[in-house]
Image 1 (cartoon, rainbow, N blue to C red):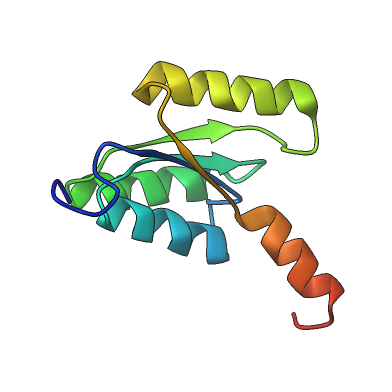
Image 2: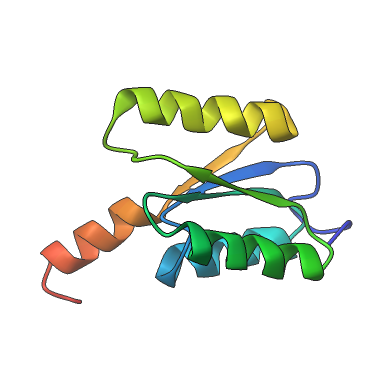
Length: 106
């Protein structure tokens, strides 16, 4: 993980406690990114993803926050910056899934 394409980057992955978001978080970590695993209510699931990433040699933290609320988004990015610094990527898996379902695919 130390020599991946995303080494030195920070990935904030929304909706990362399960499903597509969890897969995205794992892949970013596999490519060397430090990952912020965002969740709304599934702390246990988010902690499992963080554990999985850490056991594979990556770095990750779980941060609760509803991305539909501005104050919680600000808190999410403040926590990301505190944990890993300012350099980051964003993957909005929660929005992707909502769009996917609205198109009748899931």
